[in-house]
Length: 260
Ligand SMILES: NC(=O)c1ccc[n+]([C@@H]2O[C@H](COP(=O)([O-])OP(=O)(O)OC[C@H]3O[C@@H](n4cnc5c(N)ncnc54)[C@H](OP(=O)(O)O)[C@@H]3O)[C@@H](O)[C@H]2O)c1
Image (tube, rainbow, N blue to C red; front, side):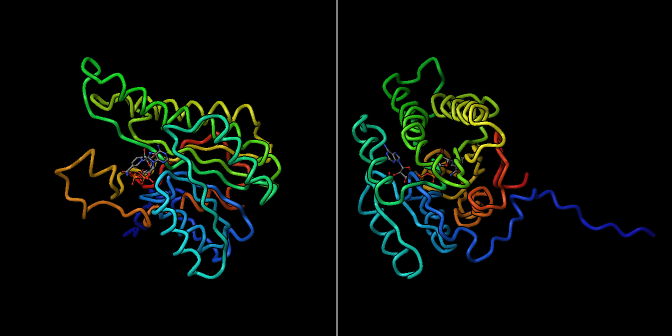
C-alpha cells in the first residue's frame, strides 16, 4: 500500500514564516492604513520591526493604529493624512518631501486604499461614481507611486505592492468600475515592473487578497455569512514575504494571498 502525503496547494508566499525581525529597519508606507487589510498590515508590519508611514483619509483611524503601534514599543510610525479622491499635485509633493526629509528613502509601498463604488450593469453605471472609483483605485495609486519612486530608488531593496482582486483578472458582470480599476492596477504593476527591470532594486507585484472580512466585502456581499471569511490578519504572510528580503528579485508577478 502506498501512503501519500496530502498535497498542499499553498505557494511559498502563502506559507512564509517570517522571523520576528523580518522587516526591522525597513520604512514602509501603506495607503488605507486606518481600516481593513491596510490596518492589519500596518500592525503586523510594525510588529515585525518596520517603521510605518500610515497614509489615509480618516485621521482618527490612523491615530488609533498609531497608538496601537506605539504600545508595541519597538517601532516608530508616522501619520500622513491624504484623501486620494481630493489630493492634488502639491499634496503628493508635500508627502514625498516629508518622507524624504524624515527617512531619506522608502523600502516598501503598499497600495491598500480602495473603494467599491456600486455593483451595476455597464448600461446603467453611474458616470460620476465610475470616475471616482477609477480615480481613487487606479489614478491615485499611479500618482503616489510616481512621486515616491525617487525615495524607493534610494532604498537597497524596495518593494511595491499593488492590491488587486479576482475581478481584476477575470471580468465579471456588474463589477463595473471596480473591476476595470483592478484590471488597470494589474497593468500598472506589470508595466512598472517591466520598466524598472528584473535586476533593479525596486520590485513591483500585484497581490489579490481574496475574500476577506472587511467593510468593503460586506458592502459587496451584504447577505453573506462573514464568519466564514478570512480575517485581514489571516492573510498577512504574502504581504510580509513581498516586503521582506525573502522575495528579493521577485517582480512582475500577480499573486494570491489565499490558496484556491
Ligand atoms: N476585502 C476583500 O474581500 C477584498 C478582496 C479583493 C481585493 N480587496 C482590496 O483590498 C484593499 C483593501 O480593502 P479592504 O477590504 O480592507 O476595504 P476597507 O476595509 O473598506 O478599507 C479600505 C481603505 O481604503 C481607504 N480609502 C478609501 N477611500 C479613500 C480615499 N479617498 N483616500 C484615502 N483612503 C481611502 C479607507 O479609508 P477610510 O477608513 O478612511 O474610509 C480604508 O482605510 C482594496 O484595494 C480592495 O479593493 C479587498
